[in-house]
Image (cartoon, rainbow, N blue to C red; front, side):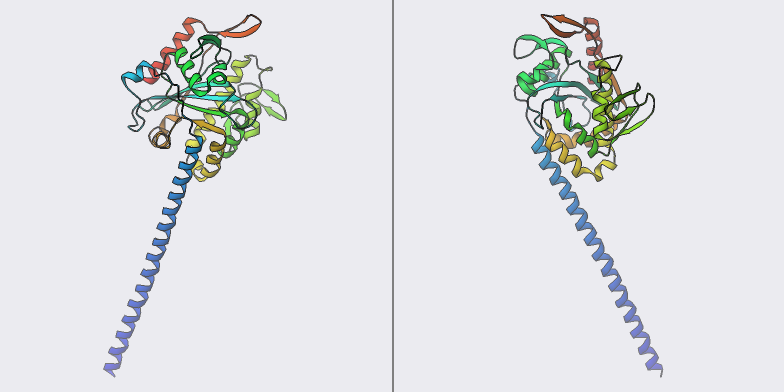
Length: 325
């Protein structure tokens, strides 16, 4: 009887051990599957990123290097160097952003040491030297004459600071980008109606792509004219930058990448984009907006914006401070 009891206990122990082994095996199997799936997702994201950035990449071949970069080239891999990006909104039909006038021009500087980003709007009618053509003309014609490299050289010459990168987008397709990041929230500086949309001064408004495009297009009803329009464009760009840098945008990366690949061009490589996203995201939390301002005049029947020397010096000094040069 005692032997039977002892035998029964041994069987129970073996059963418990067997059950424990089965449970442990299941847990390990689940962990293995989760790890494998996670690894596949990471690989898929990485592959998508690389494929899209390769599609977006367009080198600015005939670039003129600013003297500050001859002394100290920018190194975004270290995460310590301030850099600049020229944002170009191209005025043409369709998705092609290689040609056409740059209806919107903004120089963005990012400083990781102060964790600050600045956005300076450049009036599209600014009268200046078009570097590479040896003529004076509207600054937005530079892109039409010589694509991104001529636009970069011309802005660099005007503002006397290095232009490290460019990012060009068709303004019509910007609405796709806004939709891809889930929309943006903006506080209008004035009350107006554009198309089917109503905007109220001081009232935070969530905008999808179509609404954001309408918001940036209105000019005639703005007391500040094109300057007011440029301010609203900066607001939309700021909203898009913050949305792209947010955690939520990671969940929607396929839609964002699909939009970027189809409608944008840049001379940032995949590795540089990765460095920027990893090392400079904090600077998006503090964005300062500025405007290069002048006065309009007619020359030979053509309207130009003339920038006073003191205003040019003000913006140049501010940008040099941001870029630490």
